[in-house]
Structure formats: structure tokens, C-alpha cells
Image (cartoon, rainbow over all chains, first blue to last red; front, side, top):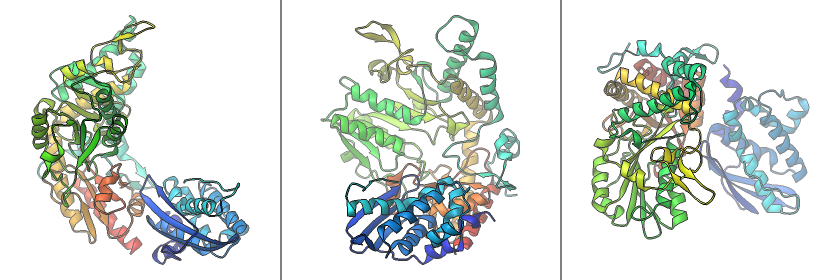
Length: 155
Length: 418
């Protein structure tokens, strides 16, 4: 069944048992919405220098958007900003691939559980769901760290 | 097969709609339950569009050549068909627009630029309801922001109806315009027009009705409605996209100023000033959607041949059946009236805590097309404390078997996410 390519077991697991859900202290907070479906996320980041101490979030949305936030938390917490950026950019590339990108070993190493979202990229209406928390994280990071390279962007 | 009293001969009707034979996701029969978003188009409408472009295409109201005259006759003929379809006293009261949103924006802008006694300004109030489509909220918010007028609205009861208990406080002597939906696109509620209009008339307010979800589904009589403006769109009633209608009372259309300026809407133009054509042309600047109007005319012929009263009865029978079947689905909560009384054929619901996006995706995999999200009526979702809904909506070609397929599909959804 094709649907299984979107709703990978890994995604459903994250949806049912989300990592790091709930709002905790942070250096910056953002609220992002997906106006087409009403998915919403409030996300906070906490940095120790350039190291991500915590990404906490609360929101409502479909399994894809909720699982994606959970994967983000699992992947990014504890990482250096540069490594996190690489993960975010790789994830964005995968999600914008329209299902044409077959993740290779190198990509799997970077994305870990997030490669499970490859199937979602075939469904244009759902790509924004998967990207919601990642765009929120990018925005929150820019606000928390500021600086010339900070780039504010809404999904 | 389930037989219900009042059903149309859908087997025959469905033969007119080529798209309903489509298979999706390889071998799934399409079950199209997204009619509140847009309807499918019968062969008769598709043929009319093709024939227009193949034989008559020309710009209207200009040129003396044969094609220009024929195209003009077809375009104006479509206006006659619309006027008769809604029982308008005069064909000159029918303005073609691009869609219902444009129709509603047109009314808001007429009133914003009008002289007394119609002018909306900082001393006056605008009244809408909490169940409006965004297209009947945002134009009024814009008008309120630009003029300083106060925007007020009727709230909703827990069972999805308008709360009119404080009608005399909401519609007051200051009210200039009351604009509300006849049939809600998200709740399915049919609103009590008479009560609202009576109060509006008491205070001398104009009334605008959004009939987007009504005109396709029930007989329309603008004289019986007693409103001042009625807006609807062609693509939800078997017509093409890109054609909408604003009906307005003639004396208002004569008094109120134009909104869009350009060709077609003028009488004379000098470099200093212009005078305007009489309505409806005053409100139709530029080359209009000609083929689309012709297509809408063909759609109206099609609907009339079946009979709007029969379509209403068909949909009422389906709605009764759907409400009954959906109520049997565990964890399903209908958002809106839970009976078929005073209710249209759009049914929104939630399914446990499974997000509507996920519901819609799993249904789609089975060939079932529904709408998910806030249906351009986000305040309704906020009112009922839900992020979104799944909506199934029916039309003249919908069948009880499709409702059964939906119910089976929802069982599959529950298993998938269970």
C-alpha cells in the first residue's frame, strides 16, 4: 500500500510517543502556523553558547507535523549549531525533492530517523506539515542568537 | 443498494459527469464528497464551453462583426438565465463577477465609497456572524479598518446554529449592513433569514446574503428572501470556475458607486472625468468572463431540467442517511446540527483525536475525496475548540453507496491510527 510510504512505522511511533513535548524554559519562542490546515506549533530553543541545550514545543496538528517535531527534538538537542544547520538543510532538501530523492547512506547518517519522511515528499500538500517545526526552529534560533547571519523566515 | 425516498436517478445523472468514472490510485473508484469546495461539471457544460470557443469566441459589447454579436448574445443570454434562476425582478440586477468572494468584496467597496444614506463610516456598524466563510469576514474587516466602522457579529450555539438571543443589541440603529451566510459551508446550518431580515429592516440596514452553498442546492428566489444583495459562485453549481454572481436591488445599484474602473463600465470618458454605464455594466469593468458565463448558463439549464426542488429533496434524503450512518461511527463528533433539519448537505466532523489531515489522507488512498482543514471558516474551529474538521459534502450525483464507502473508509482510518 502506497500510504505506508508516508506513514512509516517510525513516524507513527514518534506521533504516538513524542520526544521532548511540552514547553520548557528557552531563549526565544516562536509560534508558527500552517494556514492551509490549521497546524500550529509553539517552539522554544535554549542555547549554551552555540550548543543546543533544549528544543521544547507544544502544538496541534496531524501525525506528520507532530512526528516531525518529535524527530527534530531527538536529532537536534545536544548538537552544535553548525551540525544542526546541516541536518535542517538536508531535511529541507529531502522534503523538497518531490519523492525523487532516494536517501543514500550519507544522508541517512545525517538524518537518522528523519529519513523516514522521504515518502512524505511525494505528497505536496503534506510537505509543509513536515517542515512546520523545522521552520519554527530556524526562526527561533535566529531570534535567540541574533547576529548578521540570523535569517527570519516563516514557513 | 440503499433506497431512500426522494432520491434522484443518480445512475442516469452520473453518466453526464465523465470525471465520476475516473479511477484514482490505480484502481480505486472515485468517491467525490468534496462538493462544497467545488462541484463536478456535466458534459453539457463542457460542451457549451467548447462550442463557445470553437464557434463564437469574440469580445462582447464591442465590434459589429457577426462573432461579436453572437458572443454578446450568449453572454447576455447567460445573464437572463441567472436572473430567471434566482427570480430576479430585472436582468439588470445581475452582475457577473469572478466568484462569490469578489461579489462580497464588491458590496463592501460600494458601501465604503458610497454617499449617504448608504455610506459606512466611523459612526456606523457592520454586522456579520461567527460562521461566515473568510470571504464574508475579511472584506468587512477591511472596510471596518478603512472607515473606522465597528464590526459586530452573532455568535454560535453549541449545536451549530446562530445565537440570535441578543439580536436587538447586535443589529441597532447604527447598523448599515448585515451580511450573513444562508447555508454554512462548514457547519451545514441553514440560517433563519426572515428573523434577521426583519430586524435589519426595522433599523433600515441593508442585508447581504452569501448564498454560495445555497444556490447550487435549493430553489432560489431573491424576491422571497427580501435581501438587498445576494452573492454566489458558478463553480459550485456545475458551472466553470471564474464566474460569480452578485444580485442587487436595482435602485441600490443605480445609487451606489462603481468599484473597479475600466472598459465596459463607462458611458463617456475625458481626461478629466468619466460618467458610468447603467448597472449591471457599471460594475463589470474590463473584458468579463464570457465563456464562463456561457458555461454557467448551461449549468443552470442542466439544473433546471432536473429541478432544484428535486435536487433539494435528494440532498435532504442523503443528509438524513449520512447523519444516521456517521453517528454510528465510534468517536465521531459532528460539528454542526446533528439532524437533517434546517441543514445542508455538508457535514463536518472530528474522529477521536485523529487529525483531519490524517483522516483525509487515508480516505484519499481509498479513492474518497473529502475536504480537511478549517474550510476557510477558522473562527468556527476556534469556537468549537478544534483545530480542523473533516468535511463530506454531497450533490445531485451523490449516492447512499458513497456514504457507505465513507463510513467504511472511516473504519479503516480508525484501524490505521488505532
